[in-house]
Image (cartoon, rainbow, N blue to C red; front, side, top):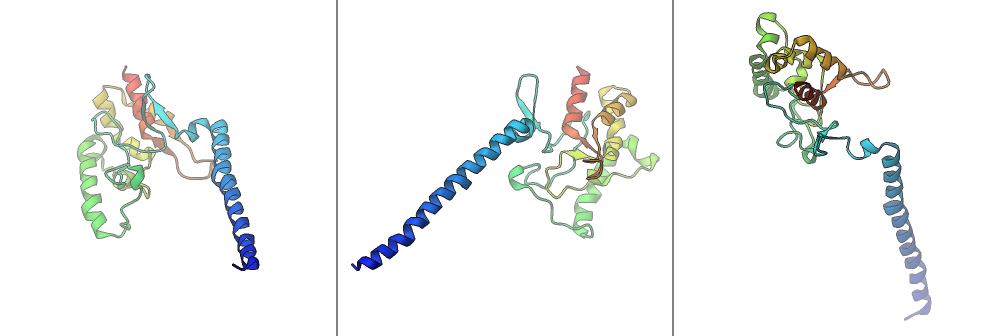
Length: 204
């Protein structure tokens, strides 16, 4: 074998392998560990997934991911099209646009009818419209929030089912209403899980 060719091959391969190893250690191991460590130090709850635990320490959800509620005394979450619903591994919307006939006829119309039937005190004779976020899913399908209007639409039913004065439930809704981020970004919103947990605590 030609010595010059052998030396030239080593001169190319060895630095490349060393560079790959060094960059893997720095960018593949060191950098992620540093970022994770800083995140856990500065934002411990957020870095851990903003998990919510019960009195026994059992994880019952995250304030960042929605979940369904079916009990009569609970506020309903925004519908989800992520997998079977609120599936973080299948995050996504329906891919149906606002002018889609299929979206209107197969999803929105039945959802509106169901919302009005479940909340008769907030529709029908009062002529109140069903808030759009109660009948359409978000782009991620994981939205943990509803609008204050959606909470108000359900308020009479929740108060009635729990045997609480409407003003008491309204006060809790207001307490759990988050404003715009930095006063500019997004819209006012209510975290459904946290609100329902507060209602459960109030009942006890």
